[in-house]
Image (cartoon, rainbow, N blue to C red; front, side, top):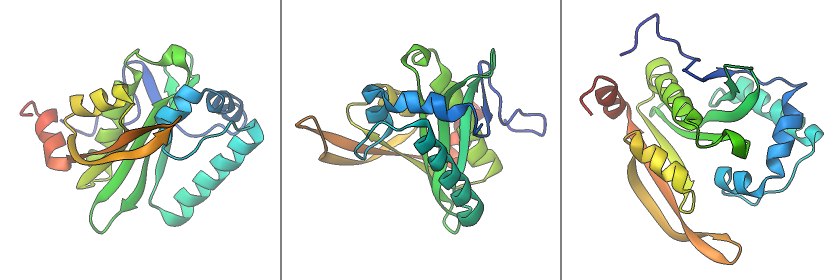
Length: 194
């Protein structure tokens, strides 16, 4: 399970890290020009961003983390070469009730389907339930994101809400699915009882 020696921020192929304001805006700007990634990551309308716009977003994220104390944002980096490959965050944390929301994405298409998302989700859940001690976590996924639907089910998330035909993409309406996972369910799985 979780002990003092457990690595919080490293997995087999990836590690979590902070934002690099010099190197990361250029990389993430490229991701915003990839409509597939943006539509997998975002429910709101998307648009390409310049490196300067991404840098402003990073500043806003860091300000929110510092002031509101209800968000944790991590970059996902390759352990082999320390390059940025994705992002993971816990947001909208309601400390009184122990609830939060989770988002993660692997940016470049060449880095997807290599197990990085599974490793990142495993680290993030360990942080959420082992370090932050939240009671439950929610993931909201568009119905067309089959990879994310499979990933959350694989990790024991339960479909709790399905908003039918709530998202319009290119003239087609898609479901929005909300998954939930309880701390106790995660602990049972981590201990081999799940």
